[in-house]
Length: 109
Length: 122
Image (tube, rainbow over all chains, first blue to last red; front, top):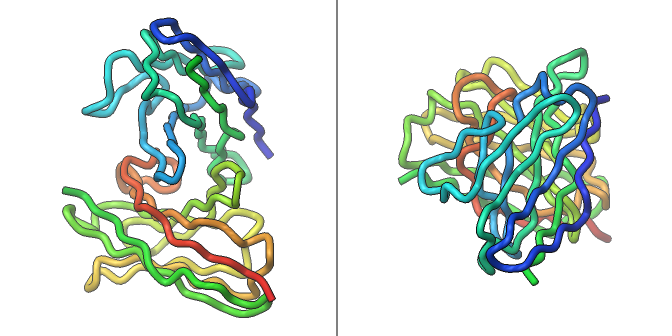
């Protein structure tokens, strides 16, 4: 079955740029979605369809997807961005399953 | 305002059954696919099951196929997850999530409930 890989952790200082990756075989041919989850809370959609932002999500959040890597970029990182981030793809081949990455813990130093 | 309210989580013994519910409000329920996603303690998100807007099509993750059944009641704007043959590895918070459109399970999840805790233990 299709597998996506995220780094377990990313650390960044306030005001800097965080890049969280989601790797998979030819992932650039799939739509990738990203969720933010803070401790004890439900996930929140921050980017969908590779690079679209839902209403209410700051422009600091952006996404890209090409080749074997999708990336969530957070510019001008704030303390409130500290959370777990998950990528999500649909494996529409023979398996017909929803795939989540293992999650990346973003730490704001 | 879109709201999803899960209920029914409990402590159950291995091998037993449990049904959890998700009551939806603030949108036209029959126009959206719905899904269940779970999160084991200290772990990541795992997709469990999805149901189309009409209820005619259902989808399951490999770990629950044959044991769990998803359904929806349009008269109550509620989606259910019937869980049979529960195992310790089913212990998790179960989130209800709305698909962005009717194309489940391909769509992203645009709204999530706060979750209900299911614990499987003797």
